[in-house]
Image 1 (spheres, rainbow, N blue to C red):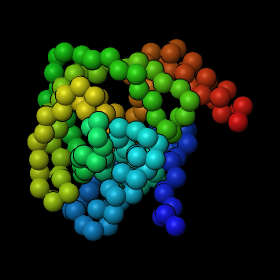
Image 2: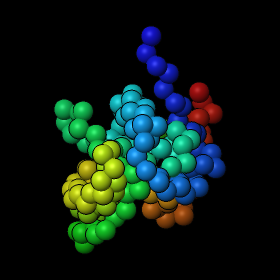
Image 3: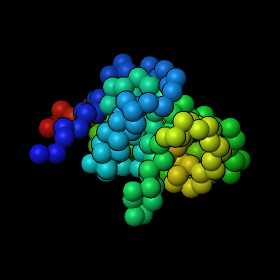
Length: 169
């Protein structure tokens, strides 16, 4: 019998608006959280997941935008060091607010510093979809949702549409 995956929090759960806590060190428990997060990300399926999305208030994220999958980058305490001036439009969504999406404009490339699964500080460049997903996860860790990048009116309409879809189930 496969292990039970942690559930995704549903918007507007307060944990989705609470900045996550810094990870003090990479332990077996942290590695297990990453393993669980990758399983949830693959089950969605999705390109990334932040620990806060499953109710764990730590600055942990995973991202896998590879075509073959199985290339997940595990990040603790990720932060953007540099973002390109060139922007990229991409349709984003979140399993925490199911059924809706919006086109969000973000830097096309970013350099991110994080602690990897070996406990080593790493600076890595991400481009295209990888950059979009990493920025999306870092937003989650700061208590932000992708729709916070929309105008207030578009944000209100998106949430109303999600609420309407949720009532139909």
